[in-house]
Image (cartoon, rainbow, N blue to C red; front, side, top):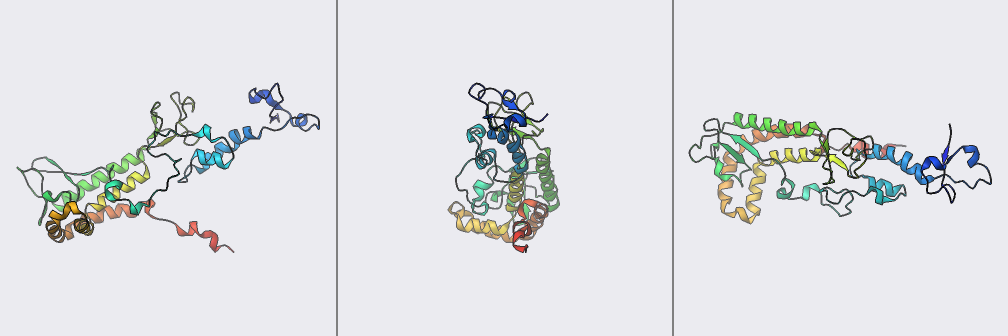
Length: 293
């Protein structure tokens, strides 16, 4: 049965949509005075599919889409308590301009387990873990052990930790940004990023779901693993930053003596980065319109 949801008259304008629905013949009568409820159709039929289609596009969110459609954005306000608030209009710096201390702040550190004493050492690069470095390579940080790590042992443990981080990404857990909800699930709502709520019916919560382990977090994790084995970056850090001025000469010597071994380990991480699509941009898809005639 065909029907049109209208604005209603003085008696019915505050009633639910079914009470304000009429057949097309009634609405088309010259003296009916019935007008279609455009806002209802935008909310119920236009906005949901647009939100689902635009969800994979970085930089889009419900508030911006609702604003473009001329809707009341207050109904799509996202909790300001989220650490990654997509409504923010502040200008963000380029990724390449963010200092490593900030960019890798939440990255998982690289741990090495000694086969001799089973002590777990944390290696954060030549500048920050100078005590573990010797001209012959890395050694256990335990003062009683100090046994060296072979390059193959380092590579094996590095690959295991990379795969563990990749596994966390592919688990695909979603969390709600509303602290009063705290919903954590692997189910995706048909309404895009809308929270499924405590009952799993996409009601009872206005929070926004986001990936607990995003592709950006995995990419930064791989960059961190590559950075700790980059001897050129370590030498630049020792030269330019005042806090490492006392270690400058030692870092320079260790960088040269461990250059080949560190390059072998870094090549392992670079192999994973080459398979990561986040660092590649398809220019033909961005500027394909310029090739059209």
